[in-house]
Amino acid sequence: MSFQRLLRPLLGVTTMVSLVVFLHLYLGARLIVGLGLTGVAASAAWTAVALLFASVPLGALTTRVGPRWVGVPLWWVSHLWIGIFGLLLVTVLTGDVARWLWAAITSPSAQAAQRAVRVEAGVVLGLLPPAIVYGYRTARGPARIERVTVPIPGLGAGMAGLKVVQISDLHIGQTLDGRFLERVVEQVNALEPDVVAITGDLVDGTVARLRGEVAPLSRLRSKLGVFYVNGNHEYYSGPVAWERHVASLGITVLHNEHRVVE
Image (cartoon, rainbow, N blue to C red; front, side):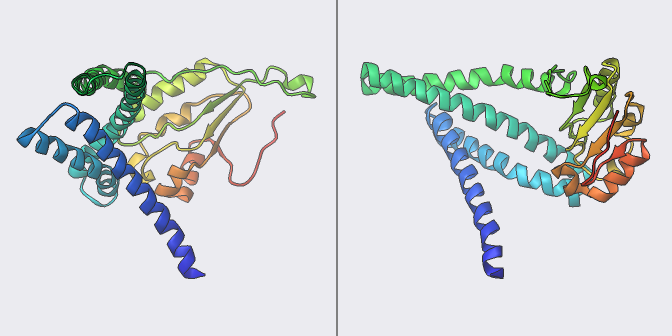
């Protein structure tokens, strides 16, 4: 029984890593081979793909056990690569589907098909820089406010129009800092909420490292309270410590419990 319990997560991790390796090989084949790179250029490109793949686990590891001068740059490289990898994968898959449909309809010659592969790779790489710039600016810019009306049959008249502002997945840490959180707090307060709900993944790091970065949370204002629950990322960084620290900022922490607001 204990062996099966150990084997199951190991198989899951192995499957996930194998899938990610395959997708990196797929992108390399579509872009490096697709562009016709050979010799030193091809070797350098494949080496870059391998290093970028390795940066993700190394970035996560070094920020926890390594010096900051190593961990922080690796963290940035790994997180930028995660975003770029997603952009490349979606764009290449879309291009492949379009090219396969074109080939099925027109039955091109081998030369035309090879030219289409090169054009696809060139277009994907040409679209990548503006997409990275747009994504980076969007991620670090003002938080997007989405207004949603939730009809609740039988809700008491006194609760009609209750305004709940939910904040989720801020991931304050190596990439987003206290200045970003300060802007979020200002946006939330400007909405004049009745209730503020912070629903997890507030941070990526320990209380000792991020104590100053999350200080703006103490300035959140609402009529009926500010409430917080841990997300899975808090469990990576010390859930009890984060619950205590968030409570010290004047926020109500909920742990397998609830509060009634009237």
